[in-house]
Length: 130
Image (tube, rainbow, N blue to C red; front, side, top):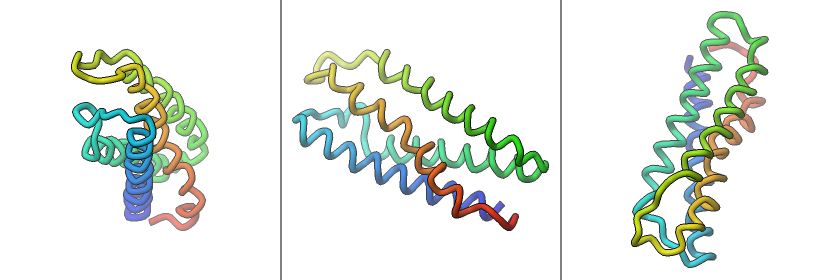
């Protein structure tokens, strides 16, 4: 359990840092400001939620000796990441937001950061069960 927890926490931190950096670069480059809708807290919270959910799922597979299903779980995680993209695409923004058409370009890539961070760290957490 400890290994899965650390995997989730480290992936959460990486995903949150990547999302926050992307937020600042995107907003500074394009001169937009979506801080009313998406901010450091929401990025961090979503990263922690997603990565910990993945870590718990991996731990459950290990706990019940179903590690051969990790490939199926990875496909489910990828599909859920793609499905989650629908929310920022279909979102109605407040009328006082400048350049609302640029919001999707900010939010959509961030939906893949937790899965990407988690999958990148999998090789470092393979091996001994704990």
